[in-house]
Length: 87
Ligand SMILES: N=c1c2ncn([C@@H]3O[C@H](COP(=O)(O)OP(=O)(O)OP(=O)(O)O)[C@@H](O)[C@H]3O)c2ncn1[C@@H]1O[C@H](COP(=O)(O)O)[C@@H](O)[C@H]1O
Image (cartoon, rainbow, N blue to C red; front, top):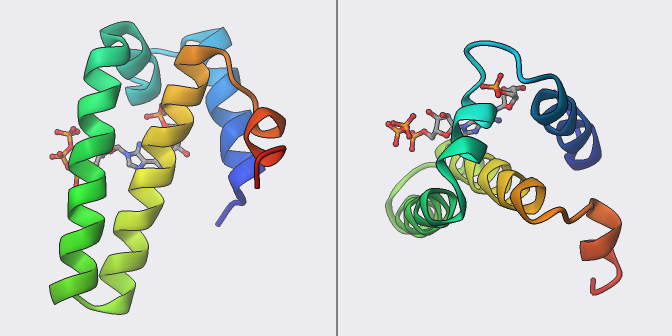
C-alpha cells in the first residue's frame, strides 16, 4: 500500500532512471495523447464500476485513474504541490 505522494515519488524515480520493463516509462515515451486516452478510459471504468461493480472493484479502478493522472503530471512536469494548491 502507498499514498499518492509515495506513488508520485516512485514514478518520478522511474522517469529519471528509466528501468527496463517499466510501464510508466513506456507511457511517458508514448506521449500526452496516449496518456490522455488512458485517463479517459480509466475514468469511464471508474464510472461503470460505481454503477455496476463492488466497492473493492471501484476502489481499484479509482487507483488506476490516479496512477494515469500521475503519469500525465510527470509528462507535463507538474508536481503534487502544483495540484494541491487548488484543492
Ligand atoms: N499503480 C499502478 C497502475 N495502475 C494502473 N496501471 C496501468 O494501467 C493499466 C490499467 O489496466 P486495465 O485494467 O485498464 O487494463 P488494460 O487496459 O488491459 O491495460 P493496458 O493494456 O493499457 O496495459 C495496467 O495494466 C497498468 O499498465 C498501473 N501501472 C503501474 N502502477 C504502479 O506504478 C509503479 C511503477 O510501475 P512501472 O512503471 O510499471 O514499474 C508500481 O508501483 C506499480 O504498482
